[in-house]
Amino acid sequence: DAMVIQNPRYQVTQFGKPVTLSCSQTLNHNVMYWYQQKSSQAPKLLFHYYDKDFNNEADTPDNFQSRRPNTSFCFLDIRSPGLGDAAMYLCATSRDLRAAERGYTFGSGTRLTVV
Amino acid sequence: KQEVTQIPAALSVPEGENLVLNCSFTDSAIYNLQWFRQDPGKGLTSLLLIQSSQREQTSGRLNASLDKSSGRSTLYIAASQPGDSATYLCAVMAGANNLFFGTGTRLTVIP
Image 1 (tube, rainbow over the protein chains, first blue to last red):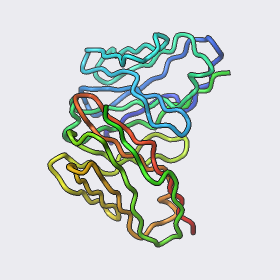
Image 2 (spheres, helix red, strand yellow):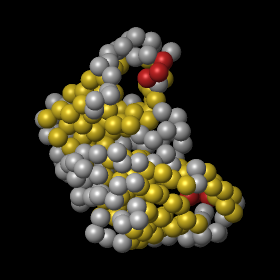
Image 3 (cartoon, rainbow over the protein chains, first blue to last red):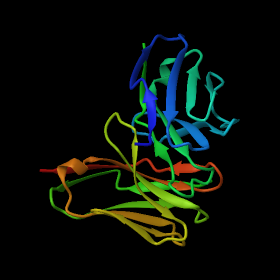
């Protein structure tokens, strides 16, 4: 089935140690997003790629970076994780920026713990 | 700025009851509205997508309505089951790339 896959499901990293989260999609969607969701809060958009064009949200910390080497894969890099970065990280895709046809498709998320 | 509110924040119902979850948004200029389900510690599963030109969408026991002019949407769940227990999030698409989420309603269906 076409889907959005995130790896790993759970990630534990040390304070200050760089970590990379992975997302892949088989939907051939043009847009890929990364969201951060803290406990009992709504998901917060960090950035998105429209094809190869990267778009950073104004309030996304510089500590967060992203790469999209091809249509199928997108990575979230956290250069120096702090305790406040512990959260669920959600990857999503949409066919276009207006998500007109099928809306957004989300992956199962990666829960990041910082120790 | 678009703000999305979901009421109630939490809801407990006995199994078999019909229930309604509410979502309101402040700016009616939306492209679409999407309802998601989130189980504890998991990602978001899309339930229903309503385009701005539509009034409702149905999938099995779920029915979502949209009244764009009043900035409201409801998710109706018929004959609730314990497996329906989860957090339900609504999100509106307003402007290119801007998906605004509510904080969700945590539903518990008691056997």
